[in-house]
Length: 133
Image 1 (cartoon, rainbow, N blue to C red):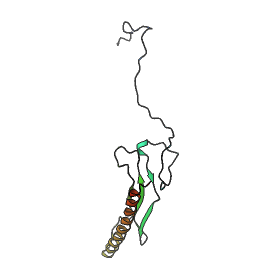
Image 2 (cartoon, one colour):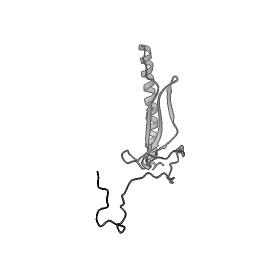
Image 3 (cartoon, rainbow, N blue to C red):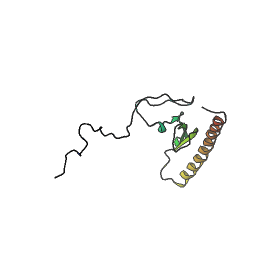
Image 4 (cartoon, helix red, strand yellow):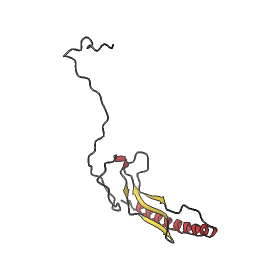
């Protein structure tokens, strides 16, 4: 059986032991927000490095087929990602099987989407050059 008696010299005069532990604290904080940001959810706490500003979503659709969606984004407190504004791009809903004619249509749509994406990229460059917030 283990000896549970107090070590000598640790009677009532001994200081209590302490330990340092990490805790998560959720509180609201005020942050700068760029003019183009569409706002933030206030019902969920997040780590400050995860705060991301998003602009309005721009869907790139060709013949009713969503090829891409893109939006301005900035993570000003990021630890591992760039903090500058960027164009956040997601693929659309064009996954599937295509006939030869469908492949041609998809290729044409991707070319048109690329042209629209370039326009958005030029807009981002202008925003950054102008010190864009």
